[in-house]
Length: 176
Image 1 (cartoon, one colour):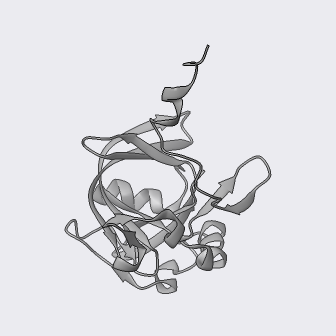
Image 2: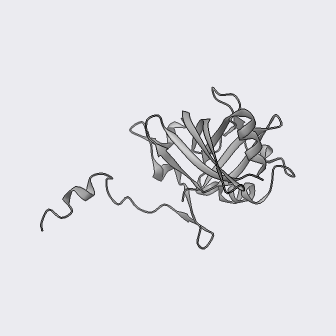
């Protein structure tokens, strides 16, 4: 699963939490969904403002990424750990140090079993520095993202390019 840092404004300050239960669920409009416990401090900010950010940290940020998932914003000012910036929504803090930032407007919240929420947000803007682009598109190798393995609670790096999606399978079974 991708390792991300989700941002929200809570009590007029930026707050961040590490989230790996996350993924794109629609292409047009672009929608991302993430799972989060109701007790998390960041949950309050998402519900209060109807906005959040998804920040993709690099491998060089792994220690601080793990830290923001270990401690609550109720007891630690995690906004001070990063250089925060805001986009057009004005209440979804993003992390300048992250290679990729997604600014999201909350479109739906699903209650899961009374203890967790699934937040679905439309991605209204994407931010990245030119050094992370190849042919004007985000380059995963340049970003050095982190992958989380849930079954053993470990972090991993991305490996080599394996092939083109929606292309490799076209040749499958043609010889039989």
